[in-house]
Length: 605
Image (tube, rainbow, N blue to C red; front, top):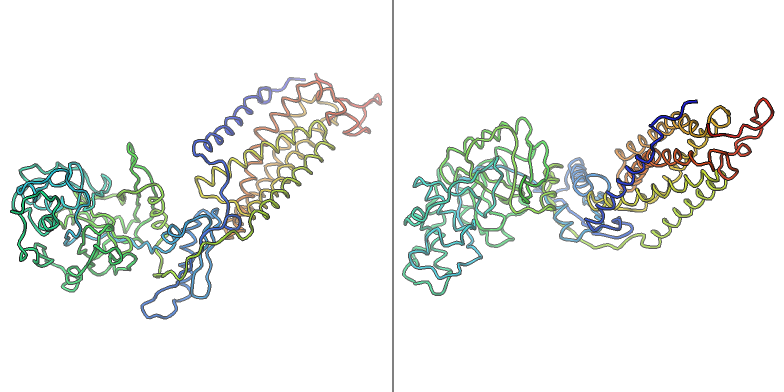
């Protein structure tokens, strides 16, 4: 009989590949300093937020709109279905329970409406002075110049100089009012204004006078100080009011952006009307045109890092209608004078950024930047991706809740898992003897892979281990053991025929057993996927855990159990049918005898 082919004569390669996978998961845990799994709401507690809808008429909102809000919030807090967050209606209120999240973070995540508008800037005015002061006392002539702010810093004081120098023919810096900028898809760097172009008297406006009035340095000479009459000039002095609704202009004049509570955060602005808004940090206020592109025009949103930098940004892909409207909007802005060559990105009534548009942008893609870190960029992308809330909500209550089950239930679940694992081990050793060692080691490998996968998923995908997850993991012990039994029995069937050596029987049995194992695991995985897709909360968590362990079962059987048995088949202890190997003729069936009446003991060819 021909010897086995190289597919099973070198099982060490498969085992080394499995070892590399385990080391990769372990290395990820070590680099991220994540050594324990995150726990869910029932085991670790969290934050409960109650939101009450606010309608213009004061009446209760329609049921279908409230249901839509529940679905959107559920997508935000549990988009992948594995964070163990719970969202439910309670009358006209919505109750959100988020595990392991602080109150302020939970409020920001669930109560933000996430209405996005892209509006052309019609007028703007500085409302807040830079916080960092020059280290040297400015001279009277230097006070109003563009060099008053520190070099390389895009401060609000640079904006009027940018406007004036551009009108003088010198390109202005392509930055937003607060130093935030969009990617190269929205803006590109242009030469900074020269010292000569930064000094004309035209650069002195309301902002320059405010700088002098504040007194950036006590040693500055008072000769350039404005007169009281100058400081009381109208708020729209120097503002081009062409095409601006008088009512909106009056709102613009009365707008106080220095008070964070009055910046309009959370206001649902009408996209079909002009709008007066504040910069998110209160440094500027704007008159904005009607929204030509809105959040519903966005197809997808994702967060990422700009290539070659560490800057986080939010990438937007528009639908076909939105892409056309975006190209039209940027095309109109590029030919307009300052400040109407800017497009403001407005989120929940507040301007995130308002960069210069230097060319029309076709293609339906845009990137938003502005001092994001990984979390803030991801949160904004999720809010835009899952959609804006159809209602405005106010917080009725925010409570920190303790775990509903606690450590006793967690220990109980772990003890149940250990008992089940021990019973499987005892049965495997008593019935399969030497082959039972393979089953035990396979279960150990499956446990290691499951634990590392849960920890890595917890750190990178916010997977939180709750009691339903633990139940799913315990049930998976039986699924994994079933795969071993199918393979072991196939090997025994081949050996009972007496026509094959152990090494040949291992390969022939594997061809037949793997089909059965794959079909059984496929049925289990399909059931887990369907249950995960249709269920929410704890049931979805159970389904996710069951699907995860089903995949791990396939991985262990293919990359450990089979190659490890192939290596054991080379040992005389198993090849000669030792009584403790589990492959001796007495154990397999004494009535399967040869023509001479002798039992067919496996012999190595």
